[in-house]
Length: 388
Image 1 (tube, helix red, strand yellow):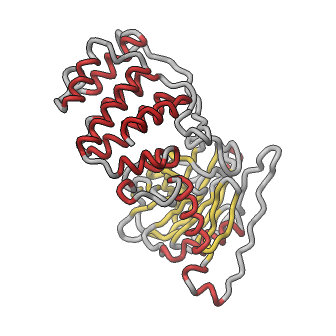
Image 2 (cartoon, rainbow, N blue to C red):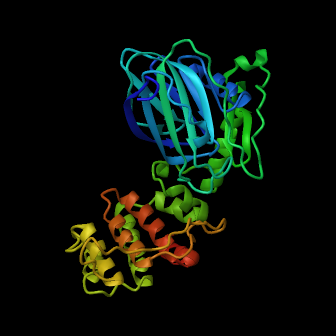
């Protein structure tokens, strides 16, 4: 307790934050107001609210594991702005459900935070920033805190923004002028934050960019039979004719292709002849269930890692490795730098057993391609000669 006020509840949640923004909603927020609030936040950074919703801009374009501490106080908490790089305040009403929702565009939803119903002043603070825009990874490590206390009618304190060394503070972005023609949904404006910074596009322009990006990824129009398979666009962008052929294959051919990819990956990784791997490849070829230890893939991976790195006798011993962020080649997306080929090869065997024969072929080829890495074109040439 400080000066008669105290923190009566605290919860920590994790948010998949993307597009440099997240939203706080106590149950009264109107989704139709989000774009207008986002415009206002860019025009008077770093946040804007209407009492029902608060939109907050993050210096980072993304943080897929963003930690947020949510605290409820009996009154205005102690002042500690010097400990934070960005601070903003607003007002927020929480409905009778007593839940604070925290979300971000696409799939970003944190676990609901219980907050007693009522009208609140709210303070949002963040720190640990490394850059405005792209932070260099999807998990840059910035952390946030949200403090709420009953709205006593007091004034909101001015915003505090991060003064980035060598860059400063970004300029506010004026709200685009609206015209009567923007009543057409295709001509309405949206704010987009990407590697180029904040851009304003019409809905039609954004849709056109999306179509162009999808075509570039697929190397042409998306292949309808493969749209649901995560790895298909990358494979099609690399070898469109082969992937088109895969989309038209029958189940026996798909199974045979998955087996061949798994074999080639294991041969390259020098594990195909191991006494416990060879029977699994034979079973895969014959359509039989995989023998032990492949009846439990975790056991198979444990055996591989024991052979490759030595057995871990107890929890006090750990395998320590240096992990770098993969940098994919524009001409070869499977060349992501040095990888442990035996682990990927074992993964190819696992993918080849997928009950969906099309998924088995697509994912086994993709995993084998990463196993080949810089030599992926050799794999595609050999598979293409055999199956196309």
